[in-house]
Image (cartoon, rainbow, N blue to C red; front, side, top):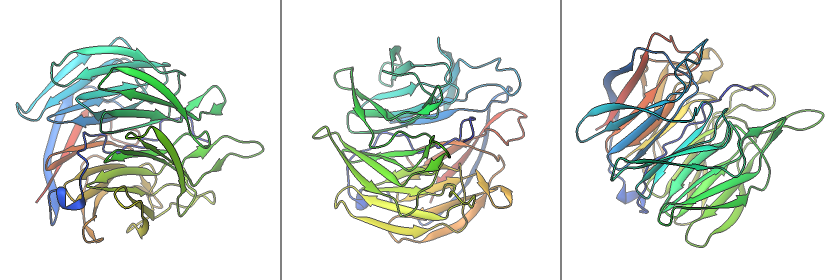
Length: 354
């Protein structure tokens, strides 16, 4: 199993539990331009949003890792990026937003956690119960959960649960340890789906789904329609959409599994093309999937799924390619480059729902 960060990025944003009718209705989306955030190329990053704030932790600089500790904070009201130097490196980490906080957790450097209070703009620190990389994170209500990952020579089943109201941490356990898993939250529920399992004599993919309910603190399980590594997930309204990944036969999956947190019902769909390590972000009633790999190489487009109609929208071109980080807030989704990108600089491409 690959040891680089697979960029299983989701819309890690503040969610208000609602039906799909609560998500703003868009009929399409288009590129809204690019922003150069830094002259330094970066990869191995993650991104999360909460309210009017977006945090991009872009990882390391190709070849030298010279800029591993800085993050960039975007204020959607002031329309301004600000660089912040953290005390820990978060290459191959996970990020999640909710309950007035944005948290960056774990990564190749260990168990470090950095927490942004979006109201005050102040940063604080914490620690995961077990240091690990290639983990996934998502938020719902007042809970942010970071689960799975890779440490030593094994995959982790540990889930670290952060209560944003009390500032306290607790732990849970996934049904099976895995890395390269997808995560997203809606309503009071956070879903961790798919992933890769380090096993003897051969690594394998899993269809396992673990669901944390913040209203009860209870975990439950389900199964994806296909076992796959490197899927991605994002939420729109009451629906969590899990898409793509790599099958054990080496083919890219076009499978889409959709979980409605209100009804508890699972349905399926199919992507226009099989992809792995794409990035996902929810914008109103749309979930956008950007970049990653397909059978021809780097996937150069953004595909949009309308959770209200079940229809796919015409893909939009990317000016950045590779394994991207993504997040969304309001009417915008933004994606930033990673492994496979040109590495000319750190660029964010914006997409706007209409």
